[in-house]
Length: 132
Image (cartoon, rainbow, N blue to C red):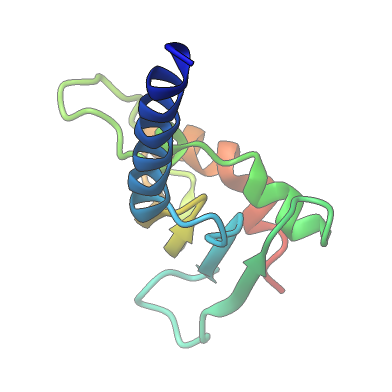
């Protein structure tokens, strides 16, 4: 009988912590609710950007969902301003990803204007290639 109040306190504490975690990141947030845009000739060209609206709960729903599952927050971050990048022009292509990925807001843009940006683009290629 002496341990019953202690057990109830522990259970109440765990329940309170669990409900706080659910408020921060909802269980039904899903894998991805994003819009991916790719413009092959950049902002200056006449062609319209292609767009993919992607809503996934699991990586197995489609090839694009699997590609989105492989994207990390570091893949979306721009290169640090103090990083030396090769001055190689990779083309006029631009892309953007906005929405929610694993419950976190994302808003990233990509281009191919130097070596650092080309590397970022190549990391995102599995997802960008799903935009048709």
